[in-house]
Amino acid sequence: MLKRTSMRFATALLAALASFVAGPNAALPAQAQHQDQAPGFYRLKVGDLEVTALYDGTGVFDLHWLNGPTATMDAVLEALHEDPHLLEVADCGFLVNTGKQLILVDVGTGGWWGGAAFGRFAGSLRSAGYTPEAVNIVLLTHLHSDHAGGLTTHDGKRFFPNADVYVAKVESDFWLSPDVAAKAPKDAQPFFQSAQAIAGPYIKAGKWHTFSGSEQIVDGMELVPLPGHTPGHTGYEFSSRGQKVLFWGDIVHAVRVQFQHPEVTAMFDADQTAAAATRHQLLLKLASEDVLIAGPHMNFPGLGRLHREGSGYSWAPVVFTDQWNKPSTSPPK
Image 1 (cartoon, rainbow, N blue to C red):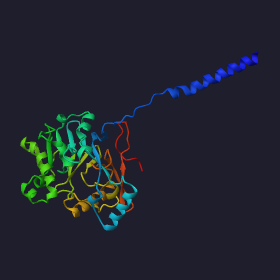
Image 2 (tube, rainbow, N blue to C red; image 1 turned 90 degrees about the horizontal axis):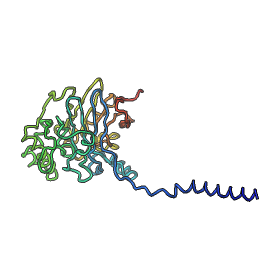
Image 3 (cartoon, rainbow, N blue to C red; image 1 turned 135 degrees about the horizontal axis):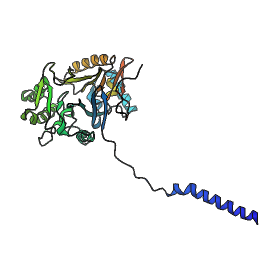
Image 4 (cartoon, one colour; image 1 turned 90 degrees about the vertical axis):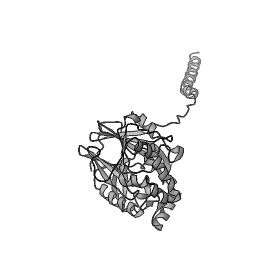
């Protein structure tokens, strides 16, 4: 009798344990996927400056937009067949909060270029805790619409109503000239048309300013002429407490190609020879310095440092951290 009771108890216990193990798993409802992403901003400190990368979109750089030696381009084509992600690029702008001023360096496409894959800059700015009305200054590396488009809505309104916009005089004179535009090839006409539409409302409001030398626009910021991509292509280097960040515009488009082959140019380079020479000189210089680089076409957040690697260079992106007080210095060697 005792043996039979023990057997019944053991059977019931095993059944209870089995239901405990299997039951909860079987009862879990299906989980819906969250088909959205974190807001498109990332910030870090450079000395006393708050630098925030602001995402605008991601696309693919067409192989036919690149120019280089035949052997190099054949190798790129072969690499692209092996890795279809080889020419993926991002577009973003950057916000510098000095504690006294809010300064944007490039402002994304604003819907003027690239279609629906781009145009997230305004949302990223707001997600980062800032409003367009609070921006004091916009610095433009050049007037291509993937960098300047966010200035102006398609119905002609200034998106940053209180901001003064600065761009190199030679850049402004080139893209805003009716005479130059009239002589430009047909496929270049949209670049002139968009630049003029984007700049117009700021010119009318007296908010459009140009520079031609080493004028002091912002304390602690130096103008860095980077000719070739466009006539007045300009970088901006900010310094604070011994740390530096360089916003270099379109020095590099195809990250995984041009670092290893700086001689490769883009069809959008107004002066191909000058663009390649500027890239060679700047990459060589930056590879030996501890300067944070802000590149709008690097993989988001477009912030990192440069190192020599063989006959070319390698890109070391910043490492994500949620520790705001962590400085953006290079690790000890």
